[in-house]
Image 1 (cartoon, rainbow, N blue to C red):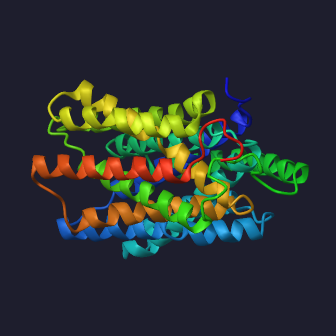
Image 2 (cartoon, helix red, strand yellow; image 1 turned 30 degrees about the vertical axis):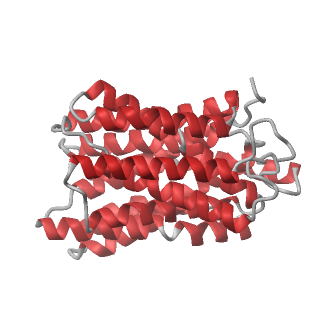
Length: 353
């Protein structure tokens, strides 16, 4: 084992927090009805207002650690559901939902990063919970589940967030510099260069998630399977990074995923292997960002969500319809991301890189 994996319990606390967050959000989103243009605008607005403000919320959370952003987030998530029923204009309740989403995400990132002592596993477990929440929210939205059930579910996550806040406070007392164990970026690399490189990698991952050739995906059950595999891949990426080294995992998983993504267009098993390997890089980009923003982990996490929006936003306006063009784009972007990762990350086990 490369290092002792710390903070796993907090990771599982926030797996549930993230699970409930996305469950409520995608139950809410799945209930929206309208024309294709209405749906396009609705989901674009959600992505923008849920992802981009997390940079601001992260900065505020770093500055004001006693503010219970997680608790406030679940109050807002729970409130968004009855507000949707009471106010016909959907963007009012959607705004409340998005702010709550941003609050709970940043809360989870802060707690898992600050308590992990440099381990990538807790934040990877936390992030993986979202994929399972998305698929569960989609499935429950198709059933006749009363809206108040989701309000109660949001309430069940509040004790988890409170407990996570206690662990975060204890970790902050134990070390004057939060996240001091994160030393994955090269010391000689300019912090701005590291930030730009990792945000580009995150944006690329967000874009590629929509560009992967999957002609076999034609049913809800297959979409559910993709989300489950993504969740497993994200968690596995954190564990493997702690066991074998993050740079090695980032490079190997990205390179290994490429042939499976390209040649799995019509073969579900091959494609899912590629999706899992592709998802494993998530924990590494976040850890590298935290390495140059040790005292601002909330901001570091917020930069990754801004990167996700930058990567997914173009998909709302343009997509390659040609299989060959998709393959070329995925190959080029993968190679660029590998080169950027090698350029800014220190070698595994190198304390002076």
